[in-house]
Amino acid sequence: MSESGLVHVDLNDSIGALQIGLLFSIFVFGIVTLQAHMYYGTFRDDRWTYKALVAAIWLLEVGHTIAGSYEVYRATITLYGRPELLTTFPALSAGIAVAGAITFLVQGFFSIRLFKVLPRPYSFIGIACISVSGLRFIGSIYLSYRAVTTKSVEQYRREMTWLVTTLLTAGATIDVTIAVSMLYYLSKKRSQAFERIASVIDRLIAYTIRTGLLTSVGAVVLLICYQAMPDNLVWLAMYTCLAKLYSNSLLSSLNSRQELREDSTTSMPSFERFSRRTTTRREHNTRLDLAPPQPIAIEMKTTMETAQDDSVGKVRITVDSVPSPAYRNDTKV
Image (cartoon, rainbow, N blue to C red; front, side, top):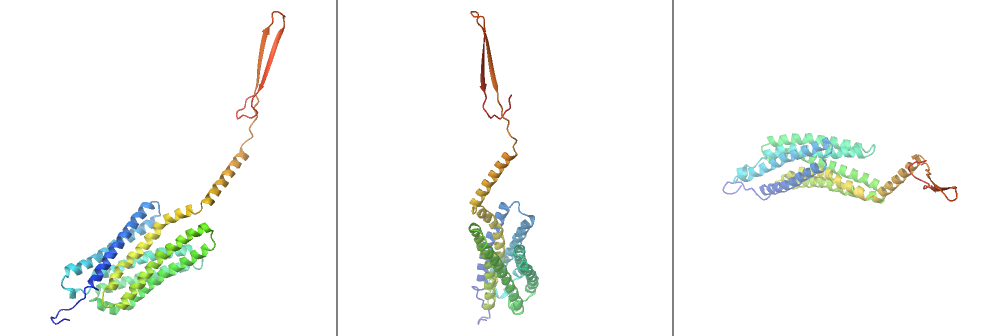
């Protein structure tokens, strides 16, 4: 407290950090919106569960973005000149549950994919990941309730540090487990694949690293900021962006299927041409084997001329025989 009795608040690492975090969050939300638009335009015939998942993710992101925008407006406009009153963030506190729902949907999607891809008994890694993610979602709902009802951010940090640390650690662990499991499976398949198929698997490995490790690194960095800088709001600013990293990873994974299909089609032209040639030859031989024998048509053309020789009194007969070609499609006798 200063000599005049006013509370000194550093706006750079509090409201300033929150504003920068919101700007970056809105930017990532624009990417999420573009990804959703590309998905619905490209995969019109996709299954309804995927379409509903993308719609749910986007609607949750809209609510999460509105919550962050409201808090920045409240801090810079409503409470302008009174930073000492900025002790709670009710909208962002409710957004904790929204972010938990987004994280659960994304991690559940990748966990189910892991369960379908991996052979037994490794496929149960996916079941374990989605179970832990469900418990994490329940914990985020309780965390959101405590954040809404708390009297100050400092009290919230003091009482809920253990739960926040547990949830962030669990989220990072799930992301790393999913990414490492997919990388191990794809690397094993790559050693057994042809050279052309290996290039497609390399692309899958790159997508796995890009989508899985990005969210895990974000969760780890958020956890470090939360533990190392408890007296500012840098960790809260980073938290506004973490959920959008999960959404972007899911939509990027869905949209990358079209590019992977094109790569898999163009990476094996020789096999396709060989298949076409083999099929054409087999069909040609089959047509020859099943076709009935063509009859040989021989056409005899006979011309008779009869002329009366008045001087001799005899009859002259001339016969011309002209054979037709040996093979014809029509039959004439």
